[in-house]
Amino acid sequence: MIFHYILLLLSALPLIKTTSISPGKQAESLIKWNDHLSPSWPPSPLNSWSLTNLNSLCNWTAIVCTKTRTVSEIDLSGMNMYRTLAHFDFSLFPNLTHFNLSGNHFLGPIPSAIGNLSRLTTLDLSGNFFLDDTPYSKGNQFSGPIPDSIGLISGLQHIDLSWNRLEGKIPPSIGQLRELQYLDLSANSFISSKLENNSFSGTISVEIGLLIQLQYLSFYSNKFSGEIPQSLGNLSQFQVLYLFDNHLTGEIPQSIGKLTQLQVLKLSHNHLTGEIPQSLGKLTQLQSGRMSISLTHFVLPLSRSLRPPLSLTSSPHCSATPSFPNNTDPRTSTSPPPLPATQLLLSAEFSELELQNANFSNWVSLGIAENYRTGDVL
Image 1: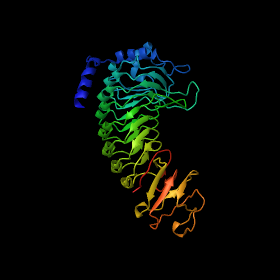
Image 2: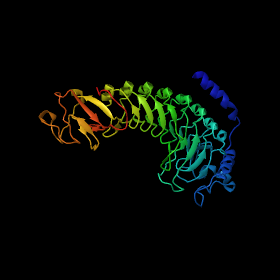
Image 3: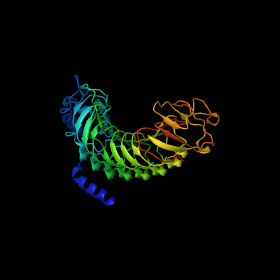
Image 4: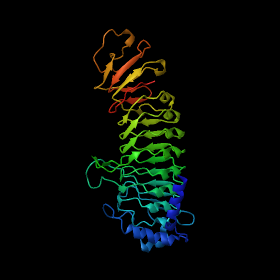
């Protein structure tokens, strides 16, 4: 891994210019880039980007400067700009800390030259889709893989590449981003409400477990396969984990029980198997209705550790054995009532409860659908 990172660094060195960067050079570069940008309708929100205004770079729309009057932030979010990053000269912006192109209509790959932004802390290229087919609803559509050179931006704290057409595997170099707190690669399978072939695939990289500052991780609506890595248990700062709507298999790792700060856990619409680990009971910070795990069938042994009583939420396709009526204590039930039941008051007299296509909630919502699971909830 270290050898791979050194090679990556050496390969990027020719991209890095050692000459001093003047505000004038940056202004000229931005004007050239702007010539290749088209707003969705006139007038352009970037009228201040012009040769007649060359000496007022720090007063330009969407630009923030450092004390040395070089560019530190570029924020074009929601400006409905078109085109690509092909004409953006990354090497001229070594002091850039925030780069936000969200809610636009950018196309094409993310250039490997993005690794030149050595001081970047926030990268937001998200699409912000509206799910219809109008010409102005599609948002960004960056395509291709995440470049390996992203691992060179060691100070990154926030990455949002959601709602694009990115594909391929997560580069191992992402494990170098030890300051990263927010990572969103979700919904790279959907374009204008139509499922596309482009999406992230392969396994969830074990290197994710090296991102010890990570608090938010969203990979939903992609094609990730394989098992949920045990290394996620290393992320003690984790608060939100979205992995639903992928092709994940295997068991839920026991290590998730180490994520004591976790508030949201969504694992539904995968192909998980085995037991729901007992360690999930340690996730005391989970917010009401903010946990879902999809299952089609499992056996639930009843024990004191599952109290207070679970509520069986509305589930018209649920089947349960034994079956209990609404607000009825199973200890006094003499015959199976019609389904669906909406209240199960658990009793030690029942050693197990077999459920199919049910949704549970107590302090959390446990969605049990569209997976292939057998085993015990301990």
